[in-house]
Length: 566
Image 1 (cartoon, rainbow, N blue to C red):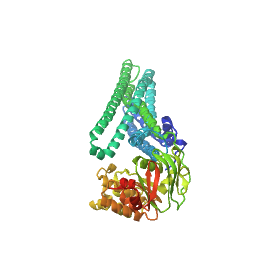
Image 2: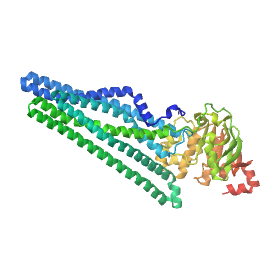
Image 3: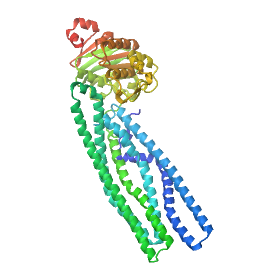
Image 4: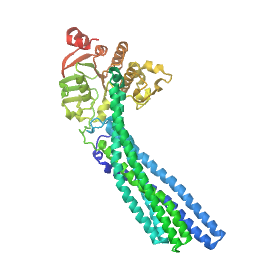
């Protein structure tokens, strides 16, 4: 994953320009083919009028055969140009949407990339719906140009028959677009608000899914559901507003297009009645008046899609153009070194100082949960180095001097509420399919009973956020993933809070065995994990107050006994 760069600081209009510039070749080809399609469509009523004119005048089988052959060529051109033109544009659209999805997801995964007040559910909506709607600009511009081509050809053909017919098409088109461009601005603002409210509802759902079990435990689920209902209702009302505006826009466009087509038809009929145009030209005018409805409809809808694409691009800019909180370094940790926390002050931490040698297994008993959370956040790079006092050194080098990728390759900080993804047990344990220690990780985390419970084994399907797993199974699956990563430094926070005492004892021994010779830090109050550690650091009131073995602390420190005894 790339680090933040200057390309990220772009507004919504800059995102659209980038998308257009990056697909200029595909858009040129698509525009050419779609323009050919519209030209052939327009040529059909023109050819029909000419055929009527010449057939009535010549009345020969040769002219009829030539006319049929010309119509066949036109129909073939219509079919092939549409098929290949849309194929090119839709491929470019899909590819561009994927690029922006990856870009937004990369920003979401970068812990110190930006400072933007968006939850994961909102970022997910931006990376999916907004990315797709932004990429629609790749199709919108060629379709807009090709529709303009059709309208111009129709206007020229009608103008050659009678200048008043051509002028009527030009003036009518300009009037229609003027009215609809005003309405499209309302669609853009309404769409932005709808996307924001839908994203907030999605974020609320994500929070509810994560906390549903504890909410049921203390009876807070009803209040949480009411909170979601309010957010969801707001999103629904805004969606209705957007649908109403879109309906008004579509109805107005259809009515104006129909009025223009009727005006062209009636004007042509009057001119034919007065002998100003021929019967063939009348047939052509009536055919063009019917045909022009479709490109006019497409042409008049384009401003709406442009505004929707711009609104989505501006939402993506919230993530992509967020100001950088800090600039990660470019160095890598040195091999064979451990972890050092030197006088760190942040949140509940006050002058925290300790060192873990390479290959050592150290447990940290934090008496205050807030201190444990703050320490884990600092080590996980959720807090940029410039936001706290003191220093953290990994592999002998300060975090501020290391790249995020290098830190993650060397040190893994596994949270107690690790995310579970839709897929299988295997893909959750080894998402990159590169680990060589999956069986050992499954065994060490005591996930073997879950694997044995299902005939599919490690290929058992897991639902999003582990909805078909218990709390203990999800925790052991997250632990198995951390162990399978086999990093030089592993930091675990409360990895066994959701398992029973017997399983906890087995997991503690297994972790100590599997991680022997690798640097391991466990932030926990579990006696089983504290007992297998080489030494225990006591973190009380934001500072390290004791450094000894678990059993010696039990024998000499009453506060420690009360804190960890179960």
